[in-house]
Image 1 (cartoon, rainbow, N blue to C red):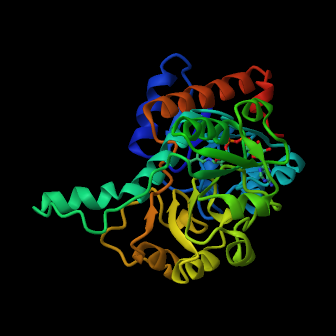
Image 2 (image 1 turned 180 degrees about the vertical axis):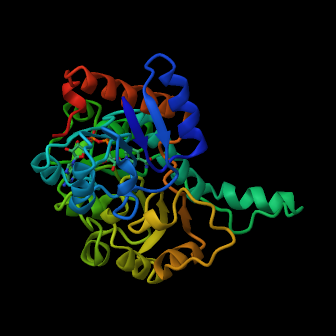
Length: 331
Ligand code: NAI
């Protein structure tokens, strides 16, 4: 089938070309992000393949429907950027890749924690300049610390098990507690108790109206344990960035590690090293010594890219045969 693939990077092309050898779809790669200004490019394509920061809202879907698009194949798990009711109304099916490598994101979460704690990013720079002093590189033992996991689905559960392996006391919050984790010794707590008990809080829930600004001013001022480490590898808008900056300034938040940012679509995945960062909140976050920002790279492993390309192309093939893979279908 003819596929218009948006937000293409070199690595997308490499993996999609490889797995398309067996499938023979006709893929056109657009580097542009999908939004209202680029949606016109979809004319003549029954299938659009989009990613996390593409805009698949009602306005865009209306243009896609007018161009005869029948399927939006999201090559990611999260779909907070897709207006599913609008897609349904307009007769556009939406599929996704529900799991490509939960290990990739869980392991990146651990990388953020270890880096923030043991400051390996600073040590790397120091020793390269001949500075072998240890001042200000002090960290803390993870062993015995309490780690709060918000959302114990695929990624959260793997992350919880890794932290159990470190000898941490793992507590969790999820409207649907994970029985396997309970058996492994994880205690499920209400949100406020999790925040007040945890030395490290890590977010692994989807972005929904209920989880929007899950960590806000009240959560930081009234419940978060002072000096706690806050980690977000899920979706930027789970954190209220302004409240987080205030929490960092007042030292309520001891460390912040984020792989996602509320307004990331304008910056992440691009080389803007010669540009002015036109976002005062992001610029402020980058200025703290105890903040580590990565640009949505949690998923970025060979295994995950393989699974993303393979499942996305399988989804399109099944759509072509009129036989969806039920677990991948959103509308
Ligand atoms: P999942 O669907 O397996 O698990 C999500 C869990 O969150 C479920 O157990 C659900 O019950 C829980 N949940 C729902 N509402 C909640 C609430 N209000 N409070 C607490 N928990 C709640 O999803 P998965 O695969 O574990 O992914 C989690 C998130 O990770 C995704 O939604 C996505 O935003 C993010 N992600 C980030 C990536 C990255 O590269 N940084 C890559 C892939 C996913």
